[in-house]
Length: 412
Image 1 (spheres, rainbow, N blue to C red):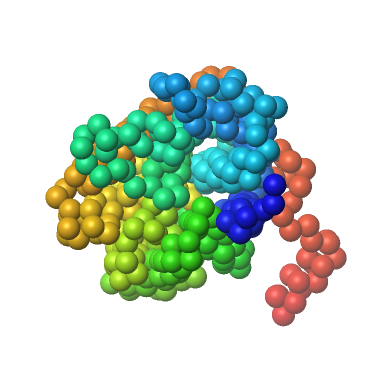
Image 2 (image 1 turned 90 degrees about the vertical axis):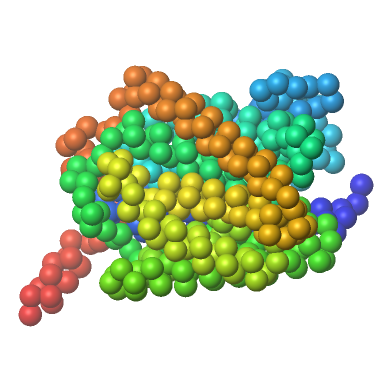
């Protein structure tokens, strides 16, 4: 069987999405303190390992309902290990795998600086099995979210690339995990500053680069791919401006980290809707998401939960905004673009359903992991630095003579 052009594009898009998880490792690694960079980056890399294996063993099988199947998720045994799977579907299988990897890795930003690798790997494996694989089946594999419009006589739920299945799902899980993990030592506004702005910038660039494949990987027509491309450029561009405007209005100095975070907010918001809104509405969406997330990241201080790298403030908030926005501005079916409110209704049901399920089950998984492993590293390890003690590795291994020379030069 020869490769069709669409298959080649999906294959290339899988590679684009694959590089997003190492990009996330750089983004998260730059945001943490220097003594936990290795630990933070390992969270993303280990998620690729455990989820990639589980996807091949039974995750793919769980992520869709075959003919005659119904219920919570697809049977984990129908394509176990992909032994009997049609090779003609393998490109799609691989494309789904890289989505599962980065969705799980996103959660890890909520527990930076204080959780051990073993606890994280256990949580990641169980979470992917009980939360991500079933929710993927609900949203894209023939489950209840896909059927909601038919049941209610409304337009079908729209989620192009994961506003619910990825961002709301991961954001709700991050909130639950952060609550169970507890606060970092010295948790307070301004107490944990990013150690490397260049790493944050490189990571954000790789994420934006890969997001083209993330959103457009299953496109089959030039017009579809072009609209997705323009919207995936426009929304994060507007997100940058929205974030910087809010910072300026609040008297904050403009920052690269803020601009990068605004871009991520815009990217998250456009993920479910890149094929279903016009570029002008995509710009408005990006502005709204960037501005809203700039406010939302401060909620953790007001509400008292320690979401270290703002997974909740970025992914949950922007995911909700982007998913509900479709109910107002989607082509033909949006409330303000010819619809009657039916799309908004099913979008809201999907948002609430995924958020509640992910939060509750993630909370139970986190409590179980805490019971088994303790979840957090000892206080002395957290204080001294997880990298050196837990991993025997440092992000920046400088020669002692070089350090002494640099200190002497600084003293002059």
